[in-house]
Length: 536
Image (cartoon, rainbow, N blue to C red):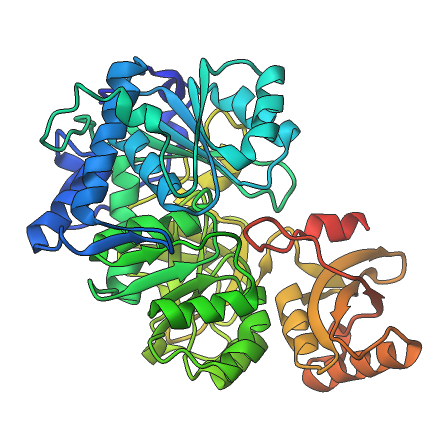
């Protein structure tokens, strides 16, 4: 059942036969008549006695949980009573990571509306495609990002209004018009199945999809990885680079800190490797989220200026090469938490805590989820055999109006599209995306394994591996390499890199072709876009 009046998204959900099966936790959340994820998280903090604790921080201001809840209630009142929005309306959110962006997101979902967050770097064409699909009634946009959104709105004029906000201060219009605001915290009495957000995939395949998550999905995710692996506390200060528009960032930098009553620090602008280390020191950061590439770039700076407060570092968004893990550990003294998740399942479902990490493995299935490594028929493969991963848990894939639902969900299982090997202890070793496996002369080669080997060479800063068509071998392994300062492309270097890989891996896995590039194509969240490398 849904209490949302605007049923636009519900009508475009997959049929019951196409939906994943769920594994509910012991909390009984699915049986609640009223469940609003934002109200629930605030109420939980209140029950723990932490409403006076700092929640949202920046260089300009700090809000306690109580102050943040007041702001959320005021914005909610403005959206519903002043603007006349009704539960189920979509609201497009456009902004970088900031206190204002966080408050606006919380208020939209608190109001029973559906948040459609967009990456700050998206251009008018890309925004137009999202607007066309989601049909938002309103946009809340950081003033400095207005131009592209206004251009997109001219092409897709579905929104009645675009309201600007400043990254550090909400638009005064919200508070001037909120005279009807009641002193008690206000929230919409949504049901567990009411939709909370549309998460557009970050486009590693070039064609974004709209993944739907309801209030229950988000709260269910909190009882998995954050509870059993992260184990944050009310004393933690969280920082990170993933955008709030990306579910990895939304979970790590907003939802999960609320779940543990931690606080979050948002920077004044985009992070740079050196500035992030400096800020972690000055703020007293204890938990950091970013992509493997960014951790590699931070290494020389954290070696010069260690961060004594830092205790947990989380990597996700792309495969973590063991070379990067060891490089970071040597520089910081911290064993990195790796994880694999997906926009479709909201967050991480395979991971390991620092004390139970196994070299080369991403980890084990997170408590609350179950996963199997299977063949093309969905049957489990023997231990040590490459197969597709299928997953079930308290969250699952629900694409809005997309025929690719039947590819992702089959017979109730979610198929994230990853190939793994599982060992006898239950550890999962990532091989590649199932459409990125390189088959050369009959041998299977996983791109991450070759990338990890190349990254161990002192000349390589970054690299990406793809399969290139070849008449003789079917495919050959091709490498795109970004060199460290002081190294230049040459025939001698190419031969040295090939021999280096042959020394570490079976000879058939070495890159027969190597191209040198200035940078690799990545999404805004740091994921390598292999499809663009293939186009090259």
